[in-house]
Image (cartoon, rainbow, N blue to C red; front, side):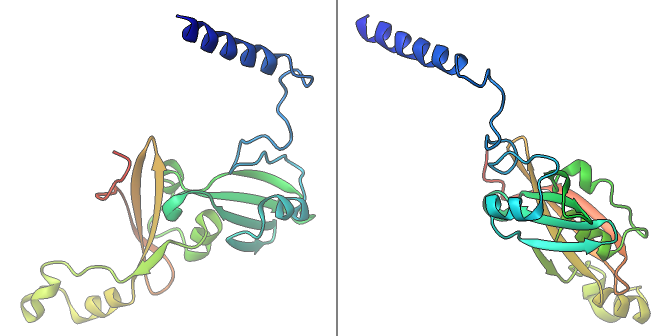
Length: 192
Protein backbone atom coordinates (compact mmCIF):
# COMPACT_ATOMS: atom_id res chain seq x y z
CA UNK A 1 0.00 0.00 0.00
CA UNK A 2 2.79 2.44 0.93
CA UNK A 3 4.69 1.62 -2.26
CA UNK A 4 1.66 2.42 -4.41
CA UNK A 5 1.09 5.67 -2.53
CA UNK A 6 4.75 6.63 -2.98
CA UNK A 7 4.65 5.88 -6.72
CA UNK A 8 1.42 7.85 -7.17
CA UNK A 9 2.76 10.86 -5.26
CA UNK A 10 6.01 10.81 -7.24
CA UNK A 11 4.10 10.66 -10.50
CA UNK A 12 1.77 13.48 -9.41
CA UNK A 13 4.72 15.70 -8.44
CA UNK A 14 6.39 15.07 -11.78
CA UNK A 15 3.23 16.01 -13.68
CA UNK A 16 2.67 19.17 -11.62
CA UNK A 17 6.31 20.22 -12.08
CA UNK A 18 6.00 19.78 -15.84
CA UNK A 19 2.82 21.86 -16.00
CA UNK A 20 4.34 24.62 -13.90
CA UNK A 21 7.35 25.15 -16.16
CA UNK A 22 8.29 28.77 -16.88
CA UNK A 23 7.55 28.58 -20.62
CA UNK A 24 3.84 28.01 -20.00
CA UNK A 25 3.85 24.75 -21.89
CA UNK A 26 4.94 26.32 -25.18
CA UNK A 27 7.12 24.06 -27.29
CA UNK A 28 10.82 24.70 -26.93
CA UNK A 29 12.66 25.44 -30.21
CA UNK A 30 14.62 22.21 -29.82
CA UNK A 31 11.67 20.05 -28.76
CA UNK A 32 11.15 16.88 -30.77
CA UNK A 33 8.60 17.16 -33.53
CA UNK A 34 10.18 16.32 -36.88
CA UNK A 35 13.07 13.87 -37.15
CA UNK A 36 13.94 14.34 -33.49
CA UNK A 37 14.23 18.13 -33.69
CA UNK A 38 11.74 20.95 -34.09
CA UNK A 39 12.07 22.54 -37.52
CA UNK A 40 10.96 26.15 -37.66
CA UNK A 41 9.83 27.76 -40.91
CA UNK A 42 12.38 30.40 -41.92
CA UNK A 43 15.32 28.41 -40.57
CA UNK A 44 18.28 28.73 -42.93
CA UNK A 45 20.33 25.90 -44.41
CA UNK A 46 23.33 26.48 -42.14
CA UNK A 47 21.16 26.32 -39.02
CA UNK A 48 19.51 23.08 -40.14
CA UNK A 49 22.88 21.59 -41.07
CA UNK A 50 24.14 22.49 -37.56
CA UNK A 51 21.12 20.73 -36.00
CA UNK A 52 20.86 17.67 -38.24
CA UNK A 53 24.20 17.28 -39.96
CA UNK A 54 24.65 16.64 -43.65
CA UNK A 55 21.51 15.57 -45.51
CA UNK A 56 21.31 12.19 -47.21
CA UNK A 57 20.62 13.84 -50.59
CA UNK A 58 20.24 17.37 -52.01
CA UNK A 59 18.45 18.35 -55.22
CA UNK A 60 18.18 21.86 -56.65
CA UNK A 61 15.58 23.42 -58.90
CA UNK A 62 14.50 26.93 -59.96
CA UNK A 63 12.60 27.47 -56.69
CA UNK A 64 15.48 26.51 -54.37
CA UNK A 65 16.67 23.18 -53.03
CA UNK A 66 15.24 20.02 -51.50
CA UNK A 67 17.08 18.10 -48.79
CA UNK A 68 16.38 14.56 -47.64
CA UNK A 69 17.20 12.98 -44.27
CA UNK A 70 16.78 9.29 -43.42
CA UNK A 71 14.97 9.11 -40.11
CA UNK A 72 14.35 5.48 -39.20
CA UNK A 73 15.77 2.01 -39.12
CA UNK A 74 15.74 0.11 -42.40
CA UNK A 75 15.79 3.52 -44.14
CA UNK A 76 12.01 3.18 -44.47
CA UNK A 77 11.26 6.75 -43.45
CA UNK A 78 12.68 9.87 -45.02
CA UNK A 79 12.02 13.54 -44.32
CA UNK A 80 11.87 16.13 -47.10
CA UNK A 81 12.97 19.70 -46.34
CA UNK A 82 12.35 22.41 -48.96
CA UNK A 83 14.32 25.67 -49.09
CA UNK A 84 13.68 28.73 -51.26
CA UNK A 85 16.34 30.49 -53.36
CA UNK A 86 17.35 32.59 -50.32
CA UNK A 87 18.15 29.33 -48.47
CA UNK A 88 15.25 29.75 -46.03
CA UNK A 89 13.14 26.75 -45.01
CA UNK A 90 9.69 26.73 -46.61
CA UNK A 91 8.25 23.32 -45.69
CA UNK A 92 9.32 20.08 -44.08
CA UNK A 93 7.73 16.75 -43.38
CA UNK A 94 7.72 13.05 -44.16
CA UNK A 95 8.51 12.27 -47.80
CA UNK A 96 7.58 8.59 -47.85
CA UNK A 97 3.88 8.07 -47.20
CA UNK A 98 1.38 5.96 -49.07
CA UNK A 99 -0.61 9.13 -49.78
CA UNK A 100 2.43 10.79 -51.37
CA UNK A 101 3.30 7.72 -53.45
CA UNK A 102 -0.31 7.40 -54.62
CA UNK A 103 0.07 10.78 -56.38
CA UNK A 104 2.65 9.34 -58.79
CA UNK A 105 1.09 8.92 -62.23
CA UNK A 106 2.31 6.41 -64.79
CA UNK A 107 3.25 7.86 -68.19
CA UNK A 108 3.39 11.35 -66.62
CA UNK A 109 6.02 11.43 -63.88
CA UNK A 110 9.75 11.37 -64.65
CA UNK A 111 12.82 10.31 -62.70
CA UNK A 112 13.56 13.98 -61.95
CA UNK A 113 10.14 14.34 -60.31
CA UNK A 114 10.65 11.13 -58.33
CA UNK A 115 14.02 12.35 -57.04
CA UNK A 116 12.64 15.76 -56.05
CA UNK A 117 9.61 14.29 -54.27
CA UNK A 118 11.11 11.19 -52.65
CA UNK A 119 14.90 11.37 -53.01
CA UNK A 120 16.93 8.43 -54.24
CA UNK A 121 15.35 4.98 -53.95
CA UNK A 122 16.50 2.38 -51.45
CA UNK A 123 17.69 0.34 -54.42
CA UNK A 124 17.18 -0.22 -58.13
CA UNK A 125 16.71 -3.58 -59.79
CA UNK A 126 15.72 -5.11 -63.09
CA UNK A 127 12.00 -5.95 -63.35
CA UNK A 128 11.31 -9.64 -62.85
CA UNK A 129 10.39 -11.53 -65.98
CA UNK A 130 6.84 -12.78 -66.19
CA UNK A 131 6.06 -16.45 -66.72
CA UNK A 132 5.56 -16.00 -70.47
CA UNK A 133 8.76 -13.95 -70.82
CA UNK A 134 10.79 -16.74 -69.27
CA UNK A 135 9.46 -19.29 -71.81
CA UNK A 136 11.62 -17.84 -74.59
CA UNK A 137 10.42 -18.50 -78.15
CA UNK A 138 6.97 -19.62 -77.03
CA UNK A 139 6.25 -16.24 -75.44
CA UNK A 140 3.87 -13.98 -77.37
CA UNK A 141 5.84 -10.78 -76.61
CA UNK A 142 7.67 -9.24 -79.55
CA UNK A 143 11.46 -8.84 -79.59
CA UNK A 144 11.05 -5.05 -79.58
CA UNK A 145 9.01 -5.23 -76.37
CA UNK A 146 11.49 -7.64 -74.78
CA UNK A 147 14.38 -5.26 -75.53
CA UNK A 148 12.42 -2.30 -74.13
CA UNK A 149 11.70 -4.25 -70.94
CA UNK A 150 15.41 -4.88 -70.34
CA UNK A 151 16.01 -1.13 -70.24
CA UNK A 152 13.41 -0.65 -67.49
CA UNK A 153 14.38 -0.38 -63.84
CA UNK A 154 12.36 -0.85 -60.67
CA UNK A 155 12.98 1.89 -58.13
CA UNK A 156 12.28 0.47 -54.69
CA UNK A 157 11.03 2.75 -51.92
CA UNK A 158 9.26 1.96 -48.69
CA UNK A 159 7.21 3.48 -45.94
CA UNK A 160 6.04 2.68 -42.47
CA UNK A 161 2.56 3.61 -41.33
CA UNK A 162 0.64 2.38 -38.33
CA UNK A 163 3.41 -0.13 -37.50
CA UNK A 164 3.19 -1.69 -40.97
CA UNK A 165 5.91 -1.59 -43.59
CA UNK A 166 5.01 -1.07 -47.24
CA UNK A 167 7.11 -1.64 -50.35
CA UNK A 168 6.71 0.82 -53.20
CA UNK A 169 7.94 -0.40 -56.59
CA UNK A 170 8.07 2.25 -59.30
CA UNK A 171 9.01 1.00 -62.77
CA UNK A 172 10.90 3.55 -64.85
CA UNK A 173 11.46 3.01 -68.58
CA UNK A 174 14.63 3.76 -70.57
CA UNK A 175 13.41 7.32 -71.26
CA UNK A 176 13.10 8.05 -67.54
CA UNK A 177 9.30 8.00 -67.49
CA UNK A 178 7.32 6.12 -64.84
CA UNK A 179 5.51 3.20 -66.47
CA UNK A 180 4.03 1.51 -63.39
CA UNK A 181 3.68 1.94 -59.63
CA UNK A 182 2.80 -0.74 -57.11
CA UNK A 183 2.30 -0.25 -53.36
CA UNK A 184 2.08 -3.45 -51.33
CA UNK A 185 2.47 -4.64 -47.76
CA UNK A 186 6.01 -5.83 -47.01
CA UNK A 187 5.90 -9.63 -46.66
CA UNK A 188 8.85 -9.40 -44.25
CA UNK A 189 7.05 -6.99 -41.93
CA UNK A 190 8.98 -6.97 -38.65
CA UNK A 191 6.57 -4.93 -36.53
CA UNK A 192 3.88 -7.56 -36.04
